[in-house]
Image (cartoon, rainbow over all chains, first blue to last red; front, side, top):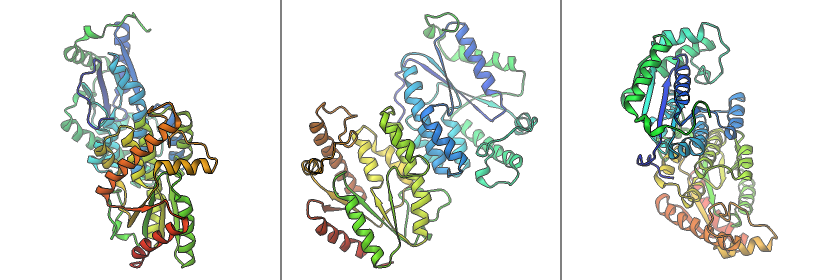
Length: 231
Length: 228
């Protein structure tokens, strides 16, 4: 278990997408996946908080309100480590293009807003390689909030940052919390040199730019699979 | 005055913690639980409030952790982080509140066991040190030293089966439980010795009668609580 990312002697490529809720990143990453599949590339998709083992504990912790900033951070890192070692790293070693809908920067942003020291969080996740491309789907905060809040959705407790006692009103809490996350992302985008994507445009226009960037930065011929279409 | 090893926990001022944190370390079979029971009686008999904590006992994930260990399906790092979560939960929800209320917290193992076990499984010390920089520096740490051979004798004498993890069977040192146990416990002890130099804890000879060990521990704890 090396503490630093291994030298990039792994043949795969890691593409991460980050951004606020409502930034359209999930739609975009889905379209990247479809594009790569239909063109017959070896692609593997993974999303934040999706492994089964830790899910029960996370659910229990959230429901019973047992989580503090530190345990919130650690339990998500546990979950991530499981996914990383079980899926992401093996697929990278097998020479796949791995698409990550949220990656460790999501934790950096959320946990630092909750008050965990950034150095501690970074060290916690130091086992995870840096992505080859990190797309940051950037949107003015008001637009992102508008997209999410337009339908008066049912917001989840931690999603809305209710644990931070920002406001009694869950929608107000969500607004304040997302504002802090937005600031954290802006800072991280400079520190880690994210590839900025203006997300305030039509879906297909954004997707065209994203595909162009991927083609320019990755030698796509190396990732042709044996399958055509969805395997 | 209490302090954290590193930046500590967000929102916790260690200066407000009045109690004492007493840690007993040592392998399974070293007599930790016997000693903790004896020390609890002794302290409560003298009017001190005692809180016992240990590993794998958190409300948050204690049960999930025990379950995950059954299947042996987690990678070493995932397991390591699982334990860290369990530790952090108990630190925040039990140890710190008890110390704030002026209790003597008796910890049946602490971060050192977690670190030593992970290092033997290939974890990097610097990574672990950073993960556990959230921990409070205990007032005293006492390590019950029992040689691997003696541990085995105690296991066999009590008719207990060797534990899969405590024998390091997941590492694959040997297919023989006996060989693996000796090798694993020897390596864990070696890591403890290194941690001892860094974190400065007391080694107590655990190969004496339980009463002799208790008296030894009492003398050392006495020195710590006299300042309460």
